[in-house]
Length: 140
Ligand code: AMP
Image (cartoon, rainbow, N blue to C red; front, side, top):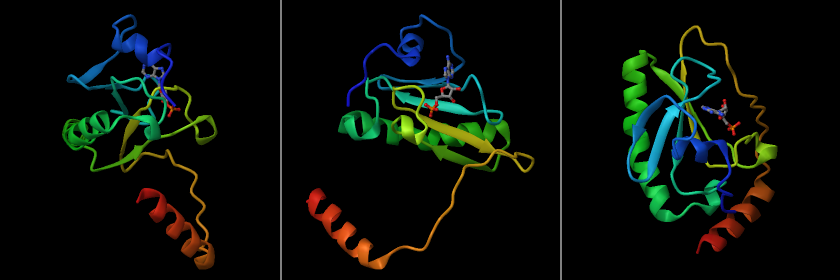
């Protein structure tokens, strides 16, 4: 689904509200999260209005993918963190609060105590066989 052009990130992109910019090019903007989980917590957004990953154009996706590694490298170098989480929520039920696609880059320091709920269970191979076949077919 496309974006609605009325999110707080659009106001940041248009310069109507301030942000701590760390990177900008024709397609991508990155800035520090206003409520960071750790020092250097950054949001990387496409300038294209898209709410979730599945509606982003291939061009914007390519540009985002192209610059993410160097933005991660710069954050790690400047903060001194060795580890980080790259998090991207799609949809309210998945924890997305701002309906403009964004990647979180969250440095993880030795003393960091933030965590993400992750409760894995063993795969059901019967279901997985059917599921992988169906998705493989969908993707052509
Ligand atoms: P999510 O919950 O994945 O949608 O993440 C949205 C993020 O946007 C949160 O981590 C917020 O702290 C952050 N955020 C919201 N408003 C601003 C703002 N004006 N400047 C910087 N970060 C913001």
